[in-house]
Length: 298
Image (cartoon, rainbow, N blue to C red; front, side):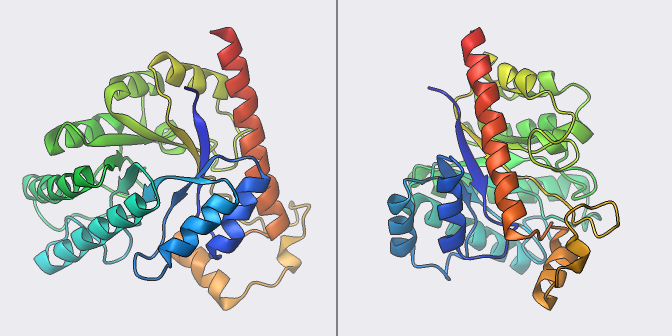
């Protein structure tokens, strides 16, 4: 089975009625969904996915702000765990098979000792994975860069955490984050081969595949070599260029207060719709071209 293409929806503030048709137009197979467990009509989302022949690859648990499994206050940890459980349920209802779990994004200072935080994390994830297993879902621990979290930054850390959580807990590797944190990305992929559940893809500069320095043929070749046949989940994060260097005159385009807040809170590129679609299509085209080449070489 070959790798399939999916894409997140968390970084663009738009309804799924906009996101899912775009994925279909651009040649994707699936979505890695992040949605409010209480704010979506799952039956309607399911019909929308079916209409556009897009599957739910899995879910993404957005740990931001007060969502935190290693907070010093137990009630906040419990609320974070409840949110993760709800995300597992949402994902299972839509047919997804994994939930990506990063640390709390933007939390750069620990609140307790290293051993205590680790124990909190393992305990919460064990409980979540038990529930996930009952729903046919696996957790996928995602390392982020040191600029987004202090806790899980590298593949070896994510792998150790997954091993302590249990045999069904997996890992999600992100090529963008790996480019910053890993001394040897090939070794990182190989070490996680038995637990690799999901792979996020973006260039070294956060742009779509084909816009940076990543050797995608080499990356995909390594994934094929370790037997990975899951999803490549596109997660580019372009910044808005509001300088004279930009040829799209983005500086002249109005930004609502909501968009400005989104940029400030999430460091997200709130791009014009046509450019976002171009980037989405480019990602699929570049990845499929490289997958074809890698397959032909094996």
